[in-house]
Length: 256
Image 1 (cartoon, one colour):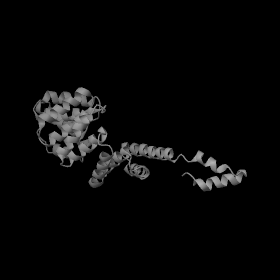
Image 2 (spheres, one colour; image 1 turned 90 degrees about the horizontal axis):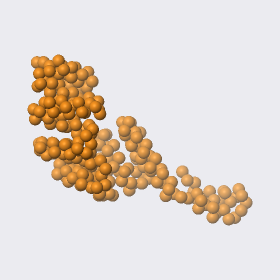
Image 3 (cartoon, one colour; image 1 turned 180 degrees about the vertical axis):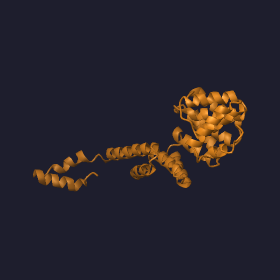
Image 4 (tube, one colour; image 1 turned 90 degrees about the vertical axis):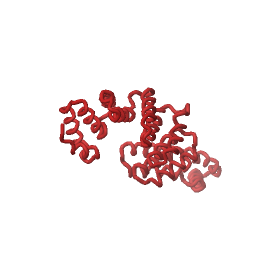
């Protein structure tokens, strides 16, 4: 921490036996730059720990950052996401709202908060924010908000609207795994099994199998009459994701 200015300058003056050293104190008092660096370092550490799922360390660093600069939009946004992962909906909502108040036009905040609102039953509010995030020219990753909007419409059983959003996302980034996974599911549910298989293949080119991808893969292959492959997917699902809902459902399928 930066030494107290007056005490530091006094000791400096005594050491040099001069009386003008008080003026030199200005050389050591760029507090605003120090505060910005402190906030930036702890923000970066917090986000990195979030990515590693080390949530306690992420929380420790992000709380240090917010204490230093409560008006930092990125810190508020990151803290909100952290509290989501900690299942603290109230604090997550509070920090998202703070971030949005600080920067109403920030597409990252609009995207994250919009997704959060949709996941917690406030679909129209969420879609309003996601639509803004999609529309802003400053958004260099619009496929994120498009996919979130698709999921929001899907939760409202607006499947055609959801599919339109997912396809728009893939038109902009044809390797975006979450949108590919959603299209695998929609294709299977619409009995377009060949399309479902194709979307799975595209998904596996950029991501690893998930409980969801395996669940729809085994059902797709079963529907196409490829029971041996369906059994392989079932085995993989049970081995890799034994505690998942999808594994529990697949365990009840006996007619391969």
